[in-house]
Image (cartoon, rainbow, N blue to C red; front, side, top):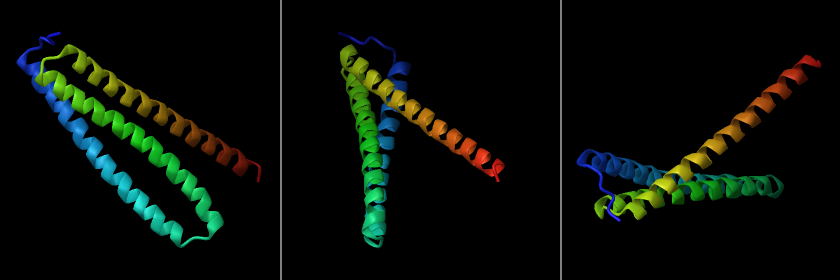
Length: 129
């Protein structure tokens, strides 16, 4: 199917795809640096301390990989959909971009909930003294 969008829409979608691609690449590099730093830090720790950090690092790496793969898939499909004027490919790219933001939104809500609970625990524990 023909996507049938005008020049301005094509330019905007290409810009979105380009920045999504750059963001994913920078995030992959950041993940690699974080893992290298964590490995160096864990090599200087006791084995029991390092075990907890390994689990945390693996969870962080898994989430980051999922997000970055989703974002780079979105960017590639957006570029292909605009270049070939293919509505199906464009829709798939937009769906992946939507999935990326959905996952990010859920993660932000989880982090805020944990922060709020920690804050409440801190306030109540300080009030108990």
